[in-house]
Length: 497
Image 1 (tube, rainbow, N blue to C red):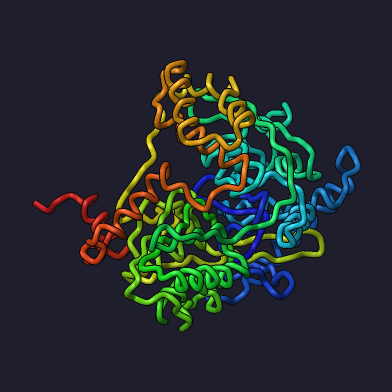
Image 2: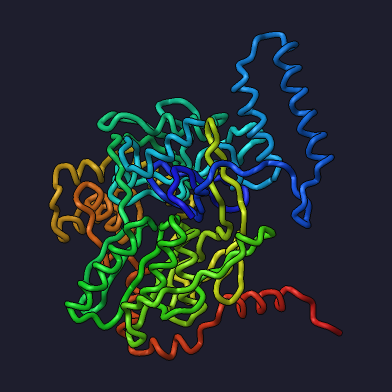
């Protein structure tokens, strides 16, 4: 698993990241591998390989000599590379032109201008274009996050140019740019809600953790998995220990992944040895177990609740799956994304490519790709009705909330409640929802708090569980992912007569 500008998602979408490391990757230390086709037994199918390679070379030469217009050989080469990888039918195996490899390196260094959104290709076409762009997750404390863009939002235009028909490279080139410059995106939220959002690009640095105390509960949010995540998590746990914490909330929501080693290292903070994750492949070297290192910092006497949602993917699912299957944590929130494949990135003379080499499995031997990890206790934020969406669209277009916060950046809770009441009467929306929207806007325009217990119902549930005195009883009733999978299969089978 490696840091990359691009991230991969489930089923129909390739996920890309504008702001950081996001998915299970293993960077190849060597140059690109020998590309001849291999049979099931590992022996090269010499005759087929040579025949097809010769045909490809002949067609390449024929195009160069006979096509009506002169063609840059690089254009044909990149098209052929894209075609070969697209033929695998795997959205995670893709050719990356030189510009994307450069962007990957920029992201690793963290010295580029961007908006801070993890995005995916919606309805990807065979030519690499897409019908729309979907926001997988905003990166906290970045311009996109402060602008109020949510997971699941569709970006349908950038600077008045529709994203339909764009390639992901084209989208990235428009969203990235010089820090301080403005980019306008048109957002579609749900079926009817559309509105423009102005975002000022900033230098995007990949954050890793946030942490604080909630009374005697340690709260640790892991934003992504980088080489620094393990050290920052250790810092947080040392801080909790010094303050006498008695339980822990590990927040993995909207964490789209990162480094495999980092995920294993973080898991080792809570597990004393044993399997964290395994990978299985037809390539012997890619089949192995990854065990927890004996660096446990959190005593088994410390109860742990893990928060997950649909934005939790890849490396964060490895951690959540390991803690669940090993009986070390109780999961709260909503089903995770479901990205259970491992890729390697290989550089070429020009550009590079990413290819799936293995599937990963949780300690109970379950691959969660396209399935996700279900929480032990589901807690969902309420959805908008169509009528509410239309009202909310009108409210957003009015810019009333943003104007209020700009005029009252440090508005007191009483002032927020009064303003929400005014909006409720004017737009006919629930006042609790409006208070949350006003608070979110207030948070986005300042240094965001580590947590917001008043409005975060999933975090509220985690705290209630840890303070309710029945954590141990709840843990005794949890089931491994393997058991849940077997139960689901049995429920789908007809009863024997």
